Amino acid sequence: MILLPRASARESAQALAEKIGAAIERRIALESGATVSVSASIGVAMHPHDGEDRETLTRTADRAMYAAKTQRHHPGAPGPGRYPQA
Amino acid sequence: MTALTNPSFRLAHLHWRRLLAAMLPVPVIVLAYWVANHLAAVFEITTYVSAAYLPAGVTVAVTMMLGAGYLPVIYLAICSMAVLIYGLPFAGFGYIDPLRETLVYGLGGLALRPIWRHASRLVTLKTATIFLLVALAASAVSALLIQHIPPFQGLLANGETAIVFLGGDFAGVVMGVPAILMLRELVTKIARRERPNLSWDRLGRDLVYTLVATGTALAAAWLPAALQLDTQSMALLIFLPIILAGLSNGIRIGFLVASIACLVYLHASVAWTAHPIQPIAIQMIFAVSVAVALLSGAAHDDRLFAWEQATYDLLTGLPNRRMLEDRLDQECLRAERGDQNFALLYLDLDGFKPVNDRFGHRAGDQVLFETGIRLKQQVRASAAMSS
Image 1 (cartoon, chains in turn green, yellow):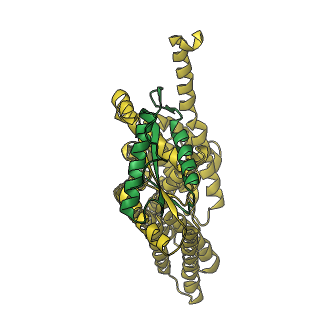
Image 2 (tube, chains in turn brown, red):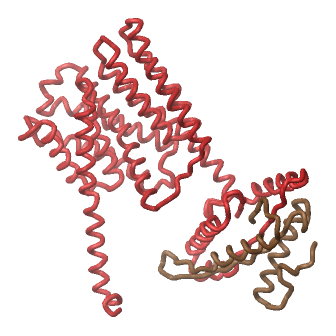
């Protein structure tokens, strides 16, 4: 859960989400010598567009995250950007 | 490629590295004793008040960190230091007295070794107390032994000289060991290229405590001289700013403030007081100042640790969710007042569970730790994150 103050545009938040996603996908070297990789599903909620209080915002971000996850596994499903507002 | 996968080559490779790693501390130990010796020459302020007591501290620190295997190296280093200070061939110093120092303080260091090896945090109120008790016990044993060892046998006819040795070594251990540990911490931080966690607010407070302690030390030295009193009891005053510095800013600042206050007091009282300064008084001021700094600093650090544990996820170093929810409420209120908007991002790791299942919890912990670092690299400082 990341809170980004003074973010006016959804695009900048999405861009950050993509940067974080790319950083996390880099392979991780374990102590044992093996390397593994994980990836991130990120959902974005904007204030006040997606809600003005904590509950609505967290719910929207949570849904957007699961939408991102679903799209990752089933391409073609509604993505985080297109997800209907709560 | 074949050479790399050949097991005998790899074994030889490992062997050399181990040998190098084992030899590396030797010049460091000799250098530490050499520095202690030079400090002794510089700070030989009055008889029996000198940094010549530092070898006791170096011995405790080295055996604590490296173990009993380094006792012969320590013995050789103390012998060479005796040669450097007192001239060849040991000026009646013999080989026995360096043995006393090595054994007594080596055992003290070995008693502290479990803390070094197993404690998750080195300094807590408990470990600070154990350290002070071990330092006192080793100094006491050393002072008892010293009366039966050739170079000092004749000198130590009266009890006062023995107690001066006790106080000197105690001060040397109590000041030397934390100084060495802090130096080591600093070197590791620089080697790992960690960015220092500085804040102006914090630095300002550190500076205030240092200035107050310096002022108190100057006043404690000047007042008895001005009033022509033969007393060093005014020095008790410097404990107050040291306790405050330790309690509010932690063990490192407490220790620095204590060292500065003691050195200022020592130099000022030597310069201003007409009466000869009592060595035992100076030694006790040094030792108790640092002890007070360690204990109050450890009390602060214990509290800070408990707070961090309650607030941060220990593995990723990120604040916990409740802390971020509070921040989210604040941002909502601020946005209502017309300030700028904000974004909320939710992140979930995919593929984490398979790593955990296949490579074990330790690998899973490593992945979480690494992810926390990468997140912190990507997100600017004003943003808030939680686990």
